[in-house]
Image (cartoon, rainbow over all chains, first blue to last red; front, side):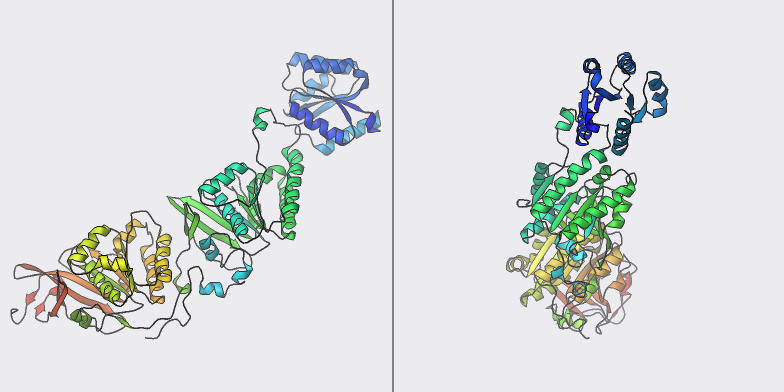
Length: 123
Length: 504
């Protein structure tokens, strides 16, 4: 069931992306990665295959990243903001731009899998 | 007097305590450092885990390198795991200390330059989640491939970052150590524990703790815990040299002894022997006390000259005087020091200030006594010993040294310099009279407008002695001791008076 799920992962840090992709792939989830706003745009162009997104906002300019988050919302793609800042600080801003919630770094692997699994069931 | 010991001579590094230790030496695993093995009563107990702790630069890696290299020389496969230094640096640093790690497997888990250059930093997952598995896999692969009997892990505290919390860390370490031990390995792990980065959990988990220190210019090693075995307590000196780490266990006199005949050591000067009722006994300690220039060292050397005639070896440790000066002035009074040195019946070591610690110096004496057979040892002087070796606890250290010499049947001579040329008599200046079996004192005396020297015995524990003083002269023909000065009174004041008749 999880094989059909395409997760979009956006992060300026390529090492983060590689670790995230590797982990999700090992658990049967296909991923699409973007480490720039251009890559994010290309992914959105192909948004029909994306079922879920994880967006690390740090490193991007605010207007650019939040406008793409708005696009995710418009395309009805559920997404989570991943932040190293205290969740309370970024929570309201993230929700305002359509995020399902905020995940704090470092991500707990089991929690991430549970989230993906729950999301698949929901879809 | 009966001999105190009936056992045959013990070699350096073999103590009577070792022989009655919990396990025999054959069951122990050498650390590769002789002195440390001695402190550990023969070495580590196999298939246990030990922690070597200490601040930066204290020598933890050196202990690990010795431990691994010792395995290679004994045909035991050894694995050195490094989490900080690169393999090249580990091998280079060991080689610089004379430790050959060729043949020792080295697993380099240190961070490479690509972490910085290729932006390998990450924060999406915790290091514990990302690094633990590949790190563990690499270690397991090496263990399975090499089947090491010895594993040194540098630095164990780094593993803390591979655990999500202290409980997980404890579980992982215990499990890891059990894995290694079940594979037949003895584990030594280093720790950088400090107040801000405590390693109490590792200390509890380890079967033994070797603590290294570097404080006030002196390096020390201290065993704080050793499950299943006794060990020598207290801090012991160590030195890092071109031959690696050398550890000098604190001298414990009760652990040394050999049988010896309680015979008298003659001075070779009949009048002096008369004064001493034969001479100085073997296995006794003698303080020769007196003001500067009165002939204390010459008197001590006189006993050595006579011993050399019997083919016995003596050693002089000179703390203040240049060796060459001592040689020249001894030759000038008919003590053939050059010939004695050449024949090996005498060794003179000029001890440079602050060069040795007390433990290291004691070790040198032990080498002389136990390896070179020295029968007379002279320290010139007690004040020099105190200053040069930074011997804070002078009395207890000298006490231990004297007891050791006594147990080994060696005649010890300690030179004690008195500041006052004349005046009120004082046996020694440092309150150590009670340590000595014998006290000989030299005095300047003034009579007839001339300065004379007198020699007397204040104490002799083993036999009686002559209670009068005798005049002593140091001439180019040697030491001359006169008849008893029975017609003088007030000798100890320095300005005696004749009570009956004038000499001659």
